[in-house]
Amino acid sequence: MTSPDNGPAPAGPPNVDLYTRNGFSGPMATIVRAQYSPAYTAVRGTYAPHRLDVGDLSEGAFTEGRSLPVAILEGDGVSVEVSRRAEPSAVAFRNVLADEVHYVLEGEGRLETDFGVLDVRAGDMVLLPRSVTYRYGEIASPLREILIVTESEMRVDPENAPGVLNVDLHVDAPVPDPAAGPPGDYEVIIRHGREFTTYFYDYDPVPCLATAGAPVVRRFNMENVHGLGVEKGGLMPPRLLNDSSTRTLVFHLGNRRSDRPPVHHNADYDEVIFYVAGPGNYGAVDRPGTVLWTPKGLIHHGPEEEVPEGYRAFLLETRAALSLTPAGRDIGAVMETGQFDFFEPRTPTTAAGPAS
Image (cartoon, rainbow, N blue to C red; front, side, top):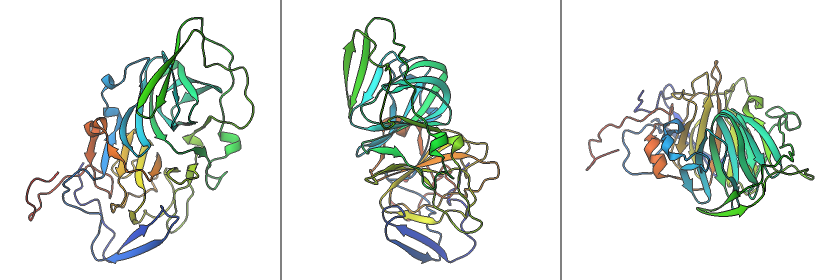
């Protein structure tokens, strides 16, 4: 499907553009135009909205057992990554400079951590704070995960709880499990930025007997997240994960009753939407694992969010200036920002040189 004009514009002028600072928490202003601003006919250069399908990543990008995630977007201490596992981890991992948010796109497995074990399944979102050791001890069916890796300190902090997410009922923590692996050699890969250092042990370093204090690793499933709705007008998506520095934020963006989002200039945040489950389409998007990236400052609109069939999606907003990695370029294509369809350029009549 192609839509070079960014999808249908609102019926007739005037068209209103919303300009915001600090997401929607800072000053706001509107611009009234006769034209529909998101529609563009061509783009030259790399600063463009992209649509990426994590299912298009080559299976050869993942080495089983010791597999490290593959980044598709990165910049300024934040990255979006993809992980695939068809067999248990041969090593454990510990990120000492960043928190990791893991979303299980498909599959089932047992996640073993310093604080105990979790049996994870599709739809689970797991917060693994920095310096927590983890590995996958069992794989019931092949796992594919999307990771948000950030230097920010993240916490599960849903807005409008318990209506959106009941923390007491639906957010849990690992259960201590003292069962250790057999005697032998064990490895822990320490991730420190873009570098890795491996530590070796002659005992299993991961299991614990008990824990106390505040919960550290947190997990909830997106089936227990509910969208808020209004009979008329627009509504901000509710936040799920917070960051006191406001650098990295995660919002629920699933099906909800609301007017179509406004045409928007987000001056300070890159927006990355993850469409993770149907059955309903989100605009022109219908394949779970589709990532929709709009860099900060670009005028965009977005499709209707009230979809009778329903769908699941979430939104990352980051102050980082993201860019495509080589793996991201391999699976990415320029998109229009009306329905988030693939973009089909038209040759500009006044341009000198090729357009992309």
